[in-house]
Structures are given as C-alpha cells and as structure tokens.
Image (cartoon, rainbow, N blue to C red; front, top):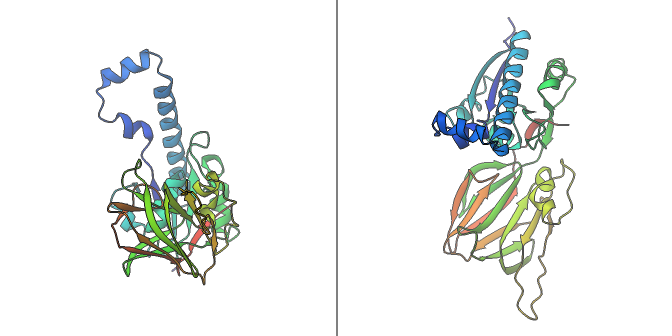
Length: 295
C-alpha cells in the first residue's frame, strides 16, 4: 500500500495580529473611525493573508493531502523537520520561507506561497494563493522539480551553530549606533575593518541587503558567497583591499571580533548569536543545500 502524501504548513502571524493583539476593541474602533490609513492597510493585509491560508488548506483537502500546520515561532519548527513529511509549505513571505528552511529536513522540499503579493516580499516564493493549486498539481505529477539552492553554515569558536543560512548574515555591534570592529580574512588576505557592519550573503540572498548596499547579485545556484562591508571608515591614507567581493567554496572566510558586544544575525533578526571580543566566526558552504521549489 502506497504511503500517503503528507504536507506541513508553516504560516506567519499577520502584522495586524502582532501589532494590535493587546489593544482593547474600543481602542481599535477609535483608530478605525479616525481614518488611520496604516491601520486599515494592516487589516486589509491580515484578511488577504488568512484568505490565502484557507485557500492552501482547501486545495490540499481537495487533493486528498494530509497536512499539519502551525504559526511561526511555535512548536512546529521541530515538526517541520520530521521525515514523515513530503513537503513543507510556507505561507507568508520570505521570512516564513527562511524559518521553514531551518526546520525542514534535508530531503524535504520547501514551497513558498506569497500570501499577500501587494505587501509581502516573496523572492523565495514560487506562487501565490491563486496559482498554488496549479503548482501543487505540477509538483505531485513530478513536473515541478525542486532546485538545489546552496546555503552557508556558521562555526563560532569551533562549534557548529546548527543553522543553515539561505539568505544572509549580518555581523555588527549590538548597538546600531556603535562602530563595528572586526578582522576579516578572505582567502589569504586579512585586514581590520571599522564599519557599520558586514553583510555576508548566499547567492540566492545576494538580491537582498547586499544588492541594496550596491553589490551585484549572483545566480541563485552559485556556490560563491558575497561579502559587503557597510560604510567602511577610512583614516587618511588608509586603503582597504577587502571592500567587497565574493569568496569561492575553497576560500576561507573568517571573522575575528574586536568588539566587546558584537552580534551575528543569521537570516534576519530572530536568530542572533553573541560575538564578543576574540571570538572567531567561520563561514563555509553548507553540505545541506535547500530543496526549494523555485521560480
């Protein structure tokens, strides 16, 4: 007897829920009556998001697909890693895909559904609510093949941090107004930087913060890693060699903290690691690429 196909849905909580969950109903009514356009925008996006989630659920039921689901940040991250699932579906935007990617087992493909294309950034999302059914059918028939998207692994003071970065890493001082001070080694070149921080992105993530900082994006399947210092501080007569570029799979990319309160942020603000003075961070290609149903 064939094993039933099982899916796991990870969905975001809407910004409307996150921002206004603690508000009393009369306070919200007062803001709505005042014509607060931002609040109206949050509520519209909330409704669209949950309408998309209901669409995804109904499509799965119509195809006879068993599924479990949970919001971001709860127990489900562990559930999404169980080998009993055949597909992880992230309903939200890129942040939801990033969290789903952390919890998905290496063999399990991830499918991102942009729940509100007018509001959510969905670089890693292959469809929206309207096109989800057609894409799922193609996947179930073997016509939508997951791509192998390279990720990077982080080792801090010799210990694997257990995260596989799909997008980017930010190394910076804990205080955003303070200068970030670190020694950067790329290949055989090492130099000290004073800057606002350092972006290190995968190829897939190079269209995000790294591109906004002026770097050129890489093909999503490239195994090269891009590094971009933010606002390098130069003393008179000082010249930097490592002003930004790429490192190949065989190049060593290592940072040594020269900050008392440094931080390492992996794939956004939710995964943060202390990076105190003298700590050494090694960035290397992960042996576990993500199987992403990608456009």
